[in-house]
Length: 238
Image (cartoon, rainbow, N blue to C red; front, top):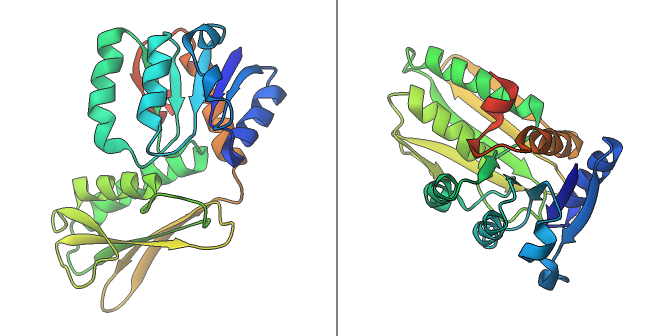
C-alpha cells in the first residue's frame, strides 16, 4: 500500500516506521518545507493519506485529499467544530474519511470502560466526576481530543452534568477537565468519581506513541477502497 503522510512531526515519523515494518511505502511526505508537493498529481499516486498536522490546517488538508479522491485517516485534534461540515463534504463527494481522537487500542478499550462506568455512576449522585489529562509541552490543543471524547461519553450518561469546562471550579453542572502540559508525556487520562467517603478512578497511561502509530496504519489498511465516514468503533467492532 502507498501511503501519503500529511504532517511529518514526531507522530508522522512513528507512523512511517510502522508502515515500513508492515511492508507499505510512503512515496509522498508533506511537511511545512514542501507544501508545493501537496497537489492532486502527487496524491493520485497513493492509496491513502494519513493526516497528523495542526488544528488550523487539518480541514484544508482533508479537502485537498478529497479533491484527489484519496481516503483520509485523520488524527489531528482541535478542529472538530468543523467535523459536521467535513463529514457532509465527504459523503457528498463520494470520498472516505476515518477520524479518531486517539488511535490506540488501549485507549479505545478505555473509552468503552468509561461509558460503562458512567452508566453505573449515573445512579449515584453523591459522586462528583472530574477528569485530568496530561500531555507533552508541544501539544497545541487543550483539552486533548481524547479528553473531549471521554467527556462527551460521560455527558451522555451522567444526568447531573450537562457540559464540560476546562479548569472550572465550583460548578455542579459542569464536568471539570484539568489539562496539564509537562515534559515529554505521551498522554495520561484519568477519570475520577469522588464522594465524601471514597474515590473511584480509572486511568490510561500511554508509554509511547507506537500504539497510536500502529492504530493509524491499521486504519489506513482498513480504509483502502472504502467510501463514507468511519471511526475506531467500525474498525475494532466494539
